[in-house]
Image (cartoon, rainbow, N blue to C red):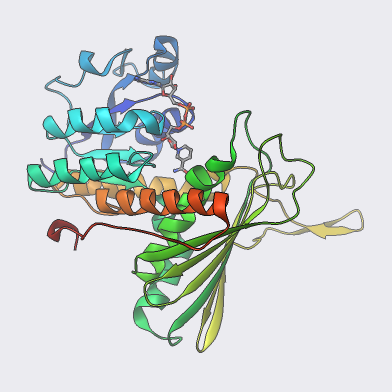
Length: 339
Ligand SMILES: NC(=O)c1ccc[n+]([C@@H]2O[C@H](COP(=O)([O-])OP(=O)(O)OC[C@H]3O[C@@H](n4cnc5c(N)ncnc54)[C@H](O)[C@@H]3O)[C@@H](O)[C@H]2O)c1
């Protein structure tokens, strides 16, 4: 399609992420518009559609997916619904931005990889937005250039103020550490070889059945070691940091930034309270990149293969939570399309 025409997008799922994407595409990103919003809860779709008079609200994907005026789809339903929707959308030949996870397990993710290969071209970008964060991109540049020598280790922390009801032990891996798995693969350009999880002292703020924080040790193919502190009831705010140790230097990203104020005998700044505060600009850049590529008939950014690899890492992580052992990540051979 012409790069001067707006990409007309359906958003499926109008919850926290979907509604944010409707707002992003309607008000913050040039070059796209929302044609329809679908949510099983029609009132929620209608609320999200209020942002522009042209947006149609629907309760079922089948009501809008075959419309002529649709060019692309953002899938923002819960992960367990992604497989069926992706298989349907691949048949429709539309470019898809699929919120992470691609699917919740490596078996179903592999089915998506296979289906995409049958179509013969990439159609899916997975929503690992950290790849579009300016600091992560800068760090990736240092890994690529070799300016600071070989990378040796990564020290990562992922802290949330608290968790919603029902946030299980496994979700620490599937919903949170999944981003570190992808970020480590992105930064190093390597697959992850193994995962180990250690459970130490547990905070009194963890709900029953959840062990928090956890220490996750990750090893890449070439032996880069990454440790991740995942702490989802950290109370003070949302923080994602990485310290990269190279042969000739140390690089930190995600630390506190200004503005700082000195007042009433104290000094300090603000702490982000959610992933939207911390990664808002990265989400904008992710969606803008997807829109621009889709208009050229291309898909950039994290692929279905990356979604599959992340799902395999999560499986190893959950097994490692249970047995405390180092668990190997088993991947199928990478298809040519994703090399
Ligand atoms: N990239 C990130 O950092 C990030 C952050 C949060 C969530 N996510 C991902 O985004 C996705 C959505 O998460 P969320 O937090 O917005 O969840 P949510 O529960 O707030 O929203 C999901 C929405 O999907 C709707 N829905 C359920 N079944 C449906 C169906 N069959 N058809 C249409 N709509 C349906 C629900 O009614 C709900 O409105 C998940 O895959 C999640 O993992 C990604």
